[in-house]
Image (tube, rainbow, N blue to C red):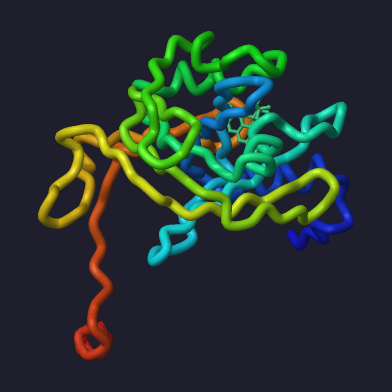
Length: 212
Ligand SMILES: Cc1cc2nc3c(=O)[nH]c(=O)nc-3n(C[C@H](O)[C@H](O)[C@H](O)COP(=O)(O)O)c2cc1C
């Protein structure tokens, strides 16, 4: 089945993309504004785009219905600072509360009973319960359509819950780290089912072909 995706209404394009590009990690993003105070919201159009510098990307829609910018987008545009938190199983319910469209000025984190701590280098506070937090400075906020902005951010400081990281290898312990992934709509996945694969060297691969 071939799909001319650009010929479809945006809502159908969204369904096709968000249900096929799965699972997606979830960024719980805290921001701050003079008027509204602390703000937090989840975003699954999210990933890492590079190191040196460490770059994270967020896909920010406008509000469905009104088409207004979300508070997160406004705060990233106006202040250029935010904190991206990874969402693990323990943080899932609180993340869901943070997705509620509370009026501007009502803090999602206090409704979700999430403790905040001062960040090291940015104004928005970080969520203490998160297993991993990235303090970010905006590199660019790109408007790709009237309804969609993309935030590129540089990580200026990283926080990892004690005991999760191997300080020698710099890898997180997958037996202790349980981020959730977004499938689509109300569907999520756990990330506990690991398996290993090693990319063989070319010579080994060729030798194996001869055996087949
Ligand atoms: C798991 C999850 C993932 C979400 N991902 C996105 C996303 O990638 N982009 C987006 O614009 N909204 C996303 N949303 C919706 C926003 O979290 C929601 O609109 C929120 O109220 C925005 O808050 P704000 O106005 O404080 O920024 C997601 C919601 C959930 C529950």
